[in-house]
Image (cartoon, rainbow, N blue to C red; front, side, top):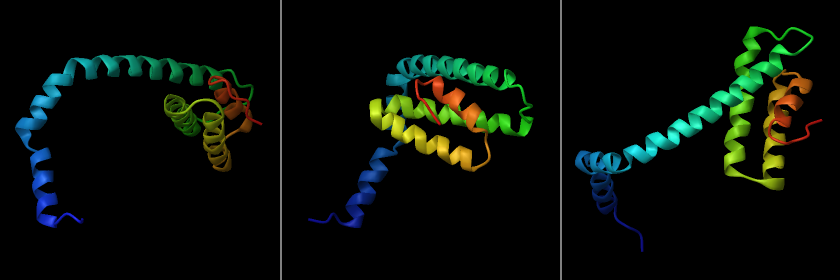
Length: 121
């Protein structure tokens, strides 16, 4: 049976009630901030590792490319939290191929992939 539009709207309005949202956020606030602290620390460490890879290169990495390499690291991080094993490797290869096609160095991409235990050629 298909729900009528009026019923869907009523349900949506109930979900976005400010008092309900406020109580949910207050109930989970400490847990949410604790989890955010952990993830922020992991991302900061990852970005530091990516920057050290860039600084260790014998050829100059132009500053315009630094945010792109950091994005590669962030995207691989996100995938590593979502997938594991062969699925992670396959999805990571797609990300790495995309950035290689955009002009990033395959050597640097391989070094970033190595941070996640992936061999990229």
